[in-house]
Image (cartoon, rainbow, N blue to C red):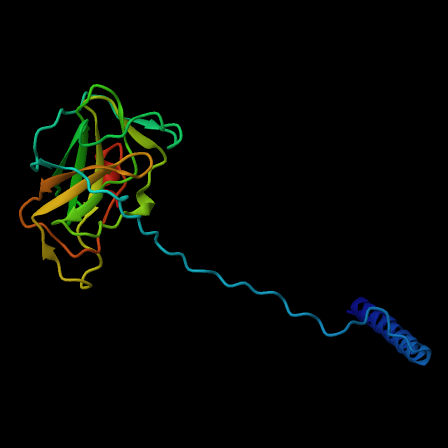
Length: 234
């Protein structure tokens, strides 16, 4: 205890001496008409930043021009897989030389799924003799609507899906948005528009929808995926 008191007293004496020294300096500075060292004008306020809220990008409508129509019944004929997983090309630039999967070299079908609920599955099959690429996402028009169905931008894969003859790619369709926002409307048919690497329409297939299909217009369709699990995970 004694040692602590001694140290405290010594510190107090030192602090007092420093204060007297500063007071003396201050008086001298005033007499000389100068500002004390280390003095400052009013400090500038600290900068603040405000975050911005992101928005979901809306897909562009198919380019100008009326697509040709090809009718393919739901669950209709397709070539079937050849046991190989579709190849993924690292980016769209690398896939530029691969022709698009269109209504002339592929077929599309739509089917119901048990999970997740209120979803459908689109399947495109390469029926040609050479590779084709399933670019971007399919554009959908329920019952001939003028506006295309929303595309889920978050579902864009890291690579373009390239199909060898007989191979398939998949896209998931969510039929409903948030519950209670819009009243679901029954739909009988859906137009599926395939696009090329420039996002240009390459023809439309009109498919018969499964019984009791209804959409409120607030759902989405995914980009083409190389497997069913990825297409239905959103």
